[in-house]
Length: 211
Length: 211
Image (cartoon, rainbow over all chains, first blue to last red; front, side, top):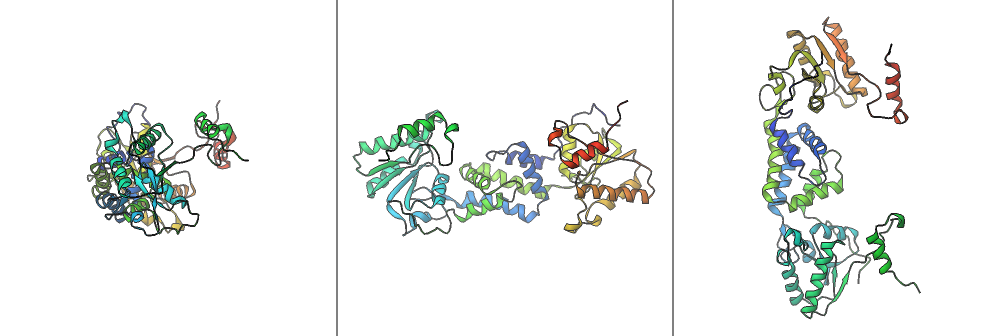
């Protein structure tokens, strides 16, 4: 009774569902299967809840802009960090993206202010210094005095290139602020057995004396 | 220069982002970390693309309803399957949710029509037969003649209870249609070593003679 030669249907979904599945697939790490699960969930969810999600997406794009000072995300002119009197305004941490800032904030280990570059140098993607907030960084360095600049770009080729570019510029401009970079080495909790060559290279070349 | 006792900030995100993270966390299998990644992605994504996602969610809730005949999802009165002249209208497959129907459709192994119950019996969640499309199923069984009814509820306690309830009702109503259920046993590709007791119980008790 089951036929083995069934004409392939053009599509088993209605077009609205298909569009939603397609949209969910644009999210990072979300494949076809997950996107389908998300879409079926939206189907079953009360209309109000689904509308809240649609509204939250719209609100983020409509309300959020970049801080006038550090380019962190904010809904006002200045972000909560630039606005805070409790932060050390003389310590500056330079990061690539707001998400990097959030990670450092979550650690609770840093109490200075930030400068978000909104990207990293990437010649292959045609992203040069003019596409990043580097001019604005040097504007800040000229107008304010900092005790320290911590370069916290990612430990990747592009992140390193971005930091090196900034270091070179700082030296050219004769800015005498103390500059530092995040320490590199074996990550806490890792096993040396499984460490990559790049990790081991950092760990060995930057090894620290004990006595 | 790094202080160990930093007053905990109330929140490191703006409220729009926080709301979006919260919304994404309502999706199945999405935890805080994934929801954050999704939200950062929306932040970086061009406004038009993000709006398309918001619109797709809204459209699904506004355009999609249940087929008047089988309760599959559709944007018209009848779904594409009920509307198709190529489907065997005398073979009926009963499933819990539209997503089950999609899985069977994707396999390309079935060419009959469906009846979607839009749920399963679940006394703990106060879901009795009146909350499912069971009355509508019997309406169809009375008005149409079928050669076979395939009960394709999930192999779970609730799915089994739902099928048993329908079988009992069919017998009470003296409907003489041939009834079948999906075969149960070891799933293709699995290893007996890792099969659960329930799987082995099905596989053994429903073992098939070879000669």
